Each structure stands twice: as C-alpha cells, then as structure tokens.
Length: 86
Image (tube, helix red, strand yellow):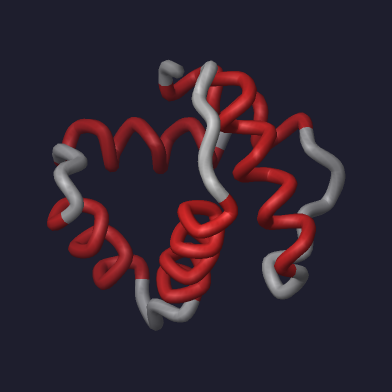
C-alpha cells in the first residue's frame, strides 16, 4: 500500500479515539484488508501496544527519531508530515 492510499484511508475514517482499543484495532484490520494482508490477534495486539507507545512520545523529534530507527527514511518522514498537514 502506498503512502497516499494509507493517509487517505486514515483521513476517510470517522473519528478514531486513540484511547479506544477497539477503534484502533478496527483501523489496523481495515488497513490490513486494504493492503491484502491478514494478521493474527496476537500481531494486532502487538501493533496496538506499539501504537500506544508511539502516542506517548513527548515531542515531535522523539517521534521522528523512532520512525527513523524503524527504517523510515528522512524523506518519507517529511512526506508523511506534509501529507498529514494538508
């Protein structure tokens, strides 16, 4: 799934409450379905835990650092920021 598709999918969702585990899990399942993948309940729970840790980051620089460590390039981070701001 390309970045544009993912961002448009997220923007098209009704309000997702980041503190509601069920709505976050539904988001993960929808993204998996759109990308042609399927995940076990255990994998979804791991994604949920990582997402919650991501949300607890105190600053944008910490989030960017985490994304860079996960293998996302600086150009991809800049593209994500631009698309989310639009």
